[in-house]
Amino acid sequence: MRWAYIREIWDFDSTIEIEEKHTGRYGAKGQEREEKRKATPEEIAKQNQWRRQRDVRRLIKWNFSPGDYWMTLTYKKGDRPTWEQMKKDLGKLIRKVRTKYRKKGWELKYIYRLAIGKKGGPHVHLLVNREADQETGTDRIVSELWENGHVYFASLYDAGGYVKLSEYITKPLEEHEPDEIKRYSCSRNLVRKEPKQKEIKRRSLVDRHKQPIYPKAPKGYYVEPESVKMGINPHTGYAYRHYALVKIDRRI
Image (cartoon, rainbow, N blue to C red):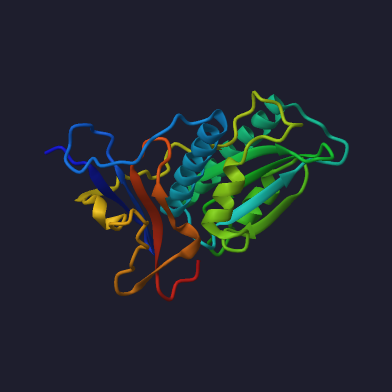
C-alpha cells in the first residue's frame, strides 16, 4: 500500500518524538497540497542544520543520561596547537580512557567537538558516559590522563540537557574556525534506532480551513511547547507536524 502521510514515532525512556509528514511518494491517496515554491539556499542550509541537530539530540537521548559528563578540555596558556594536533591529543586521551574503562568492565561512549574561542583559545568539548566504583571514576580518570591543560566537568543536565547540547555540538563553525574541521565526531558504538511508522490522514494535521491542528498528548504525557513545529511546507505544499511528548514527573 502506498501511504501519503505517515507518523514516525521515536520512543525514548522519558520522551517521545513524533514527526508527521508526507512520504514523498507521488500517486498515493491524500495528496492534496498547497502551491509550492523553490527553496532558497538559506532555507536549505537552515533545514540541513535542523536535521543535524535533531539527529544528534536523538543520539544523546539513546546513549547518555542526565548525570553523564559534559567536559571542557583546555590547553595550557599560550599553547596554540593545530587542528590536526588537537585531534591527535584527543585520540590519545580516548584510547587511554577506553583502556581504563575496559579493565573495569565499562563501555566508553562519547561525542566530541573541537573548538577555538574568540580569543584564540583551543579547547575540546567531550560528552562521555559517567562511570564509577569504589576505586575510581570518570572524572578522576580523565583528569589524570589529560596532560595538556585543565578539565572542567558538568553534568549533561547542568549543561542544558539534550536540546541545548545538541544545538551546541552541531552549531555552524565560527568565522575564525577553519572549514576543514568537522563539526563533531562520535564513537562507533552509539545506539541508533529506526522509528515506528503509522499511516495517518492529512485531515489530522490541518482542519478544513487549512489551519494546523495543535497536537494532543496521551495520558501520562504533555506536549513540550517549544518542540511544536507545524504548518504547510512552502517548498512541497504538504502539511507537516513535529513535536515531543514528555513523560510527566521527569527531571530532564
